[in-house]
Image: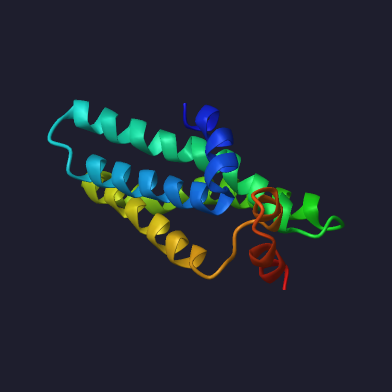
Length: 144
């Protein structure tokens, strides 16, 4: 569901804001799972995180491909995909000791979106999106 709506979200609000919105979904979903009183809230939290995954799985590669030089574009997006896969693999080993403390394991997932959202404050939106939305001066600043 998140991936289906993310294309129009990326076009209307920009890739940068779409990634930020996915961070909000990740963060809120992790909190719901951490404090869930029963399995139903756990499912709701998982659904919210899934929306964030859907949005970021579309918005991030689009953003990376638009800000990368053409001769590095494929390598940049593939490095992102490799990073996602490596993160999933490493999370298994990080979470194994936390298995008895499943709430903590789910709550720790609220930390990466905070770090990413803070990092987003230091990068511009996609110059291509800015030009498409007639923000030429901002696009010029984003390039340099």
